[in-house]
Amino acid sequence: DTAVSQTPKYLVTQMGNDKSIKCEQNLGHDTMYWYKQDSKKFLKIMFSYNNKELIINETVPNRFSPKSPDKAHLNLHINSLELGDSAVYFCASSHHMGGGSYNEQFFGPGTRLTVL
Amino acid sequence: AQKVTQAQTEISVVEKEDVTLDCVYETRDTTYYLFWYKQPPSGELVFLIRRNSFDEQNEISGRYSWNFQKSTSSFNFTITASQVVDSAVYFCAHTGEYGQNFVFGPGTRLSVLP
Figure 1 (tube, chains in turn red, brown):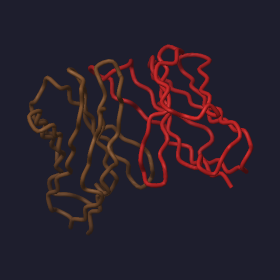
Figure 2: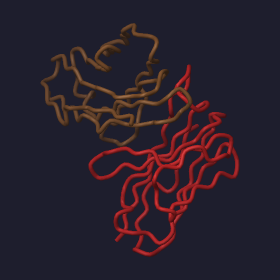
Figure 3: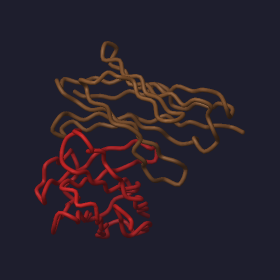
């Protein structure tokens, strides 16, 4: 019954590898997001998708590629992992874009990525 | 550019004390929304409140209250009679009317001691 789920919860990998994090929401929301939270707890939006279409693409290395096969899923693929990619990655969803009524973001539990 | 400042990096209080977490924002959006989220030690992010820019009414929810002052660009959060379970990192955030400029503040770590 989890509203926003992410897999895996923990991911430990070597530099240079390629990895993916999956996100699914069962809330029927139109918009999904990826955030990165660094070791100092600073949260930064990376991407947002609305109805499978990329809306926000912040300054993120192109080694990061989001993929939305359908409205309920937004996966994050990372190529050639670097030490600085170590962080907690949060997926979120909201009813629609913007901050209107009932449009708070619901967050997944996070994926802690450690690059060795 | 849009910016959210939470000047208090860490706050420690003793249980049952009242505590206010400050949030100051900068925006060029005419219509915008402000949020507070809680991140307890377990790591998940929990939505607390949303406020739109044209509604300056303060809000109270149990021990939580929020004071939105457009004139000072502040959206402060007060916990009354704090409890140990309130210990968490609290984030203030801003977004424009259409989801643009979504920015989180740096967070305030609140420790409530028994």
